[in-house]
Length: 294
Image (cartoon, rainbow, N blue to C red; front, top):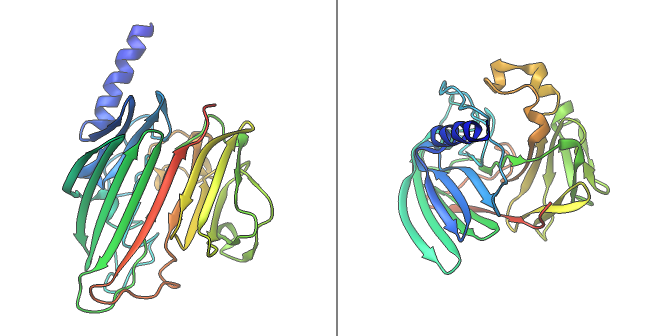
């Protein structure tokens, strides 16, 4: 039976990751699907997978595809930038092929530089994979002749053994907005944030940037850092995942919410953002680090 399960898992891994580039640091591996949005589809540290992916590939029907670390660009949701009146949820980057600009071997890990041009913008995306950590740099440049508004996010789906055991530290004192009541809740967060129900909160950065730790079962599991993000989202779809069902989320298990947590470095939304001038660029960075073995 064990050999059968191993063979099935191997076949599934081939189907899910057949078009990827593998970045390595000793035994740790980061898999990047360059042809489908430069999505990081797998990140293993010490043989343990850090990212959630659906157990079977979602239909390629143009709907937002969950899992791994996709890029949200050059808009969030359906809040379109200047000059765009229609398009897929969360922009075009996540389903577009990226160009490989360079690939370098480092002393401990690898660096991959990618690019994409769309909607009057150029995206330059650099992935630095070191043992136990991912350092991501996502730059947007206005290549149009007029000022343009845009938004970008790095959207990780971190894997949880069980959602109700997760607690986020580092949010104390941050201003936040709660999308669950149409942004009606605006306040200052106090203390830690246990993830025991549907969460969809936008936290606004302080001048010192963003730094948080995820605890699982009382142990530090993962650190999330960004020195220049203007906001970041904490998201878990909760039981709402099953309530909304397949029309929004595709063919995914009803209980997938139990294993997903996103802490998403982001720029401000379209209505709050200043337009980029022709030739002007903006950078979003993120560092995800395995902090402790649980």
